[in-house]
Length: 415
Image (spheres, rainbow, N blue to C red):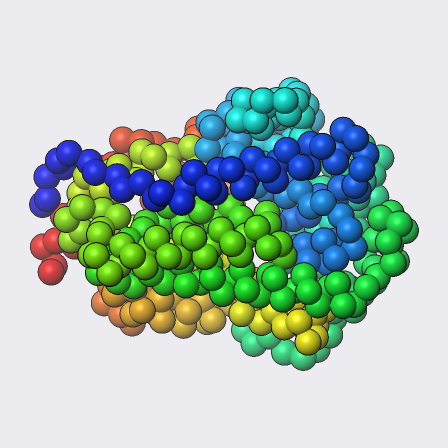
């Protein structure tokens, strides 16, 4: 087994630019909220953000805030606040940490961005249940707490094929949102503006795909842990020129790394696929654990969830409906197995790690035999680690390290 040595973590130079773009985004939201110059819509992360932007809203994503709570390791202290008002510790820890933080008057934005004291108060809450029911319950709580309208889209689950009747259903639901959006924003619906916004999202998603696929190179120029950070603009700024401009810079840097053979993990000897949510409060620790073992976790379903090839400015609403129905989390196990087999081949993967997140069953794909079926079909070994996206009480660092080290040793012996 490879011994852990000096850990060399290659900094992506574009990170400084990304930090500025994200700061501008949050300061812009804060200005809109405090001055009342623009209406603010909260939107679930894979909700109809393009439609909201086209209607003149500034868009805030509670899941992004929840991930920040996890990454700053504040979430575990916030979750009991939500538990105390009736939200189970077994449900989404994004939901419970975010609501708990609101109840305690805490936000990581205040420390990261001086002058921001609170999350931006919404004028409207918009959900899409393509991820899970929790996002609807999450925004419904804020609707009651803040007396703000809450509207959204109810999506089907376990889809094998994205068929025309399904697309028609979701497209009609999107169209039904427009009168409420217009009434609150004070702006009429402009199809040309929506076309422009969808075109921007399409360009953003294509650049993000190219960024992630630089990891098909050997050695790979970035890691999954890099991806969880650099996907920020694809999540909160899709539909804007800023996101596109950023990914052009990032892509150029990574392509230069590929040309020069620069590895994100020095001495890369094994290539790992991460299936499931990150453990936000352990990003650095996990990154250093794998790097020390000369192993690059270089591809994931999670980061690829913001690739939407079906966006089409010629038919914006219907293409949005199709794009958001194609999301991995919405699909059947049969589809997921086929998708994962293709990803394992594309990235030349040696092993798969499944994160069984305690409070995120919809994004944990290790509970119904999928790892065993996939390993039987591909011969690629897998490891299931128990943990959670935000609730660090569900995480055992010692057990994770022991299991990962044993898994890496197994992979090395099998090469």
